[in-house]
Length: 464
Image 1 (spheres, helix red, strand yellow):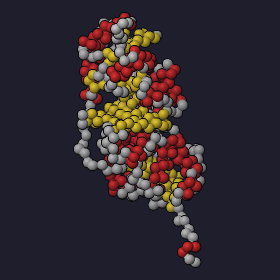
Image 2: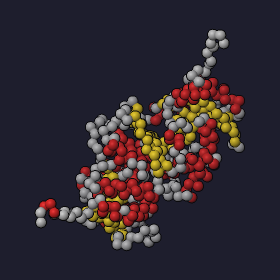
Image 3: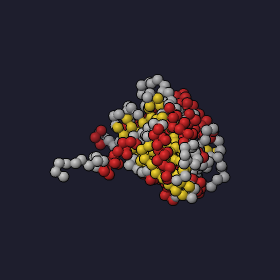
Image 4: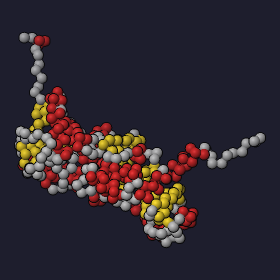
């Protein structure tokens, strides 16, 4: 037989024996996708076979067939098993799941994790374990489900200088705020609806107090800036204090209220925060509703990039897990994984305190009547705080004044809020919400030009 007639037999696909910690909603989604795409795996020269699963409740009925899979209550047993080549962690929590994942990494077993809390709060442990075992942990599913933001930061934008990363990254709070705006219900009613539909965590405070968003932001900021800010060190505010009056006043002022997570460089410092913000209706983030997430990146080379997609749900999250598995199986294990692309070392970036920053602000004040609006605006002008827009809302609770100010330092604003409650016509404490951008004056001027033309005063012409 000559070389020309020799038929080369294709190599047998490599089989990756996969262990999984957790088989709840996301874990069951992973099993379904494994079964659905098995022939696709083989066509691409590998196979993923689920061999072991650790669960918290061995008696729980699950919507997938685990025949042939060893089921145990011990996560460490799966992590230490010599029959596991790759470990998926969708169990969550900061104790046994983290311990097991780090044990696997230290043995040289790659880990795919959707555990944002564990990663964000124990990042150093993961890095040390991965270094010891020369293994990586991929975590696309931990940040925004199926939005490929980690992939982009680690590969497409590996050498870019990121100046800002921000977005709507918690679908539960976004659903609640959307419902409050559209139905006119209050926060408690919207939270009850979201919980009944299964949109919130088992402990809803993780969502509504901004904790979930802070954990995701901790990982995003690490990828974007190379600085790990633990969630407990992130300025975090939730949406519990957002009222129907806030929603109505924001609407009148041409804004919507969103929970915004952001990390940005400000005068050589890194400002990392999660808080409600007024977003102008002309901005993309204002159109992100319900369980959808959106993330915006800014940098001097590419200017601005926006990523939009579902940030929660069984199949979006499970699909992100599966895609990370495929990267490892295809020999792309360092892509979109910790520690990631190694940029030149920078000095540690100090954190910026929110009170030291300057924003435009939305103020809500309970008032006797609309007749006191001019006096309140005049008081603020006397304090060198310019009022750019105003609106009044009235309901069964009384009348409320909404103001948008020009840029002012937050520490000064907080001092003024204590004084505002004593101004004539104000009947209670004032509250504030930051604006998403500090260029609201430009927005006002653009709207005025669009309505009135290039000049607010007509020029007289000779002979007219």
